[in-house]
Image 1 (cartoon, helix red, strand yellow):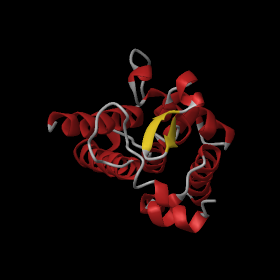
Image 2 (cartoon, helix red, strand yellow):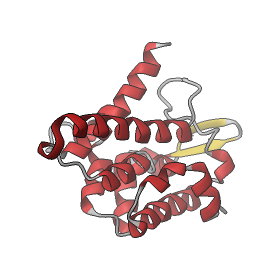
Image 3 (cartoon, helix red, strand yellow):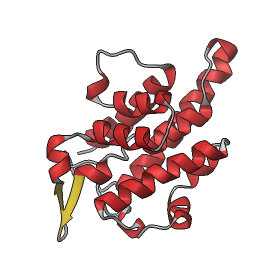
Image 4 (cartoon, helix red, strand yellow):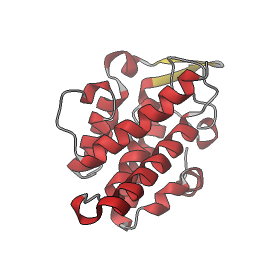
Length: 180
């Protein structure tokens, strides 16, 4: 069973969330997803971030990179646009950490192979991740980022934070795919 301290060590980006209540809710979602999916913290470096292509990049690396990429984008935009581009950094960081948390329910491991779980066959990770976050009292603005970060969000209104998460996620995915 994953411990709070072990997940905190695996996700140091949690400390970028200054609101302690939000930080703990974000952590609660991860713990719940890991428990429901049957994962240990030691698994996070082995779970692939995508089942679509073999990048050699883990789920944990991807989550941390998207979060850090999002922060860099937001800091750059805020530096240029100031008050004209209000970005809630706590919400953005939580959204980055949680954007793919539903994959802990979407994926399963059989031996050394990863595939879609029964949940994953019915619900893609933006849906299961949003449901988990909502269940733990994560603000709807962050649930929106989780729901809208992938193709499921195409054609819906996205907040600035949701656009940043969406583009940070795809910048990571498409850049890795271009190397294959």
